[in-house]
Each structure stands twice: as C-alpha cells, then as structure tokens.
Image 1 (cartoon, helix red, strand yellow):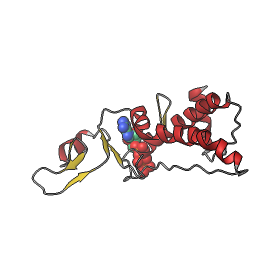
Image 2 (cartoon, helix red, strand yellow):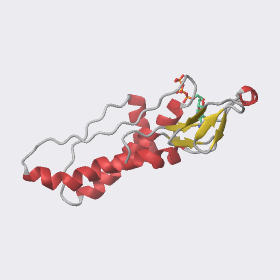
Image 3 (cartoon, protein in one colour):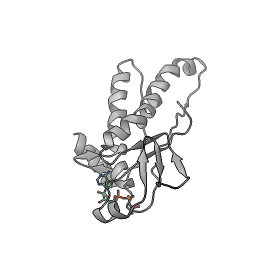
Image 4 (cartoon, helix red, strand yellow):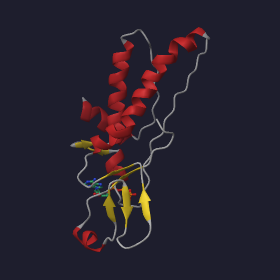
Length: 155
Ligand SMILES: Nc1ncnc2c1ncn2[C@@H]1O[C@H](COP(=O)(O)OP(=O)(O)OP(=O)(O)O)[C@@H](O)[C@H]1O
C-alpha cells in the first residue's frame, strides 16, 4: 500500500454552481478546459458515488490491516515479550466549507459516513479474529452525537 493516497470526492453541484463552475473531471484528473493546468489524484469519485464506495476504496483496507496486521505479527511480538504494539493509519477529510467533509466522514442514517463504517468493520473483524483467542483493547475518542449514531445505525 502506498504511504499517502489522495482521493477527491465531487459533491453534487447546486444548479447555480453547475452553471458557473469551470472545473471538469476526466478519469482521475481535474482541469479547466483550455487551461494548461491539470490536477491528478490517486482517485476521483464522481457526484453519483456513495460513501460506502469511498470507504471501501481505501479506508476498509486500513482498518483491516490494523487488526489483521496486528494478528499477523502478534506471535512474533509475544515471543519477544513486547507489551505494546501501536498500529497507525490516518484518514482525514480536507476541503473548503460546504464541500462535503461532514457528509463523507460522519454521514447520516441512510448513508453512514467513513467513521461509523470503520468502527462497524473494526468490531466485526475483531470478533472474527478473537475466535483465535486473541484479546483486543480499544480506545476511541468520538463526539457524543457520533457515538450514539454509530450504536443506533448498526444496532
Ligand atoms: N456527496 C454528497 N451528496 C449529497 N449531498 C451532499 C454530499 N456532500 C455534501 N452534501 C451536502 O452538502 C452540504 C454541505 O456538506 P457538509 O456539511 O458535509 O460540508 P462540510 O465540508 O462539512 O462543511 P463545513 O466545513 O462548513 O462544516 C450538506 O447539506 C450535505 O448534506
């Protein structure tokens, strides 16, 4: 997996923005017709895409690798009597106001965001992996509204 992966999610434009925005998408590039600059990304998700597609494209692998990676090398670390193994991965949303960061990361009941999807997957994978007698300790810092949404949406 590359160290840094940059994706763009295009939000559906308002009718006014649709008429005035000069930007166009082609494959994984964004450009303005008849202008020399072309901006390339690892992946561009179009207006029609759903959050689950954004999640599955990359974050799912990170969640999976964090848990299964731990599992895969745990015996090695246990043999060395190491107590702590920190597995890290970071996913963050960046964009101007109203561009869809909250929609993508938190989501709503009908379309949960990347964070609730990751938490849901995390517990599912741990449940699966725990069958092999491994124990996990998890700590999370989530805003209270998001925490209750995660519980409600996936109950
Ligand atoms: N992919 C999408 N499909 C449909 N609606 C969307 C999408 N992305 C964003 N929206 C809508 O656009 C509006 C702005 O999105 P959102 O609040 O997520 O932006 P934001 O980047 O978090 O803004 P801010 O930085 O001001 O908090 C919301 O009404 C949201 O529901």
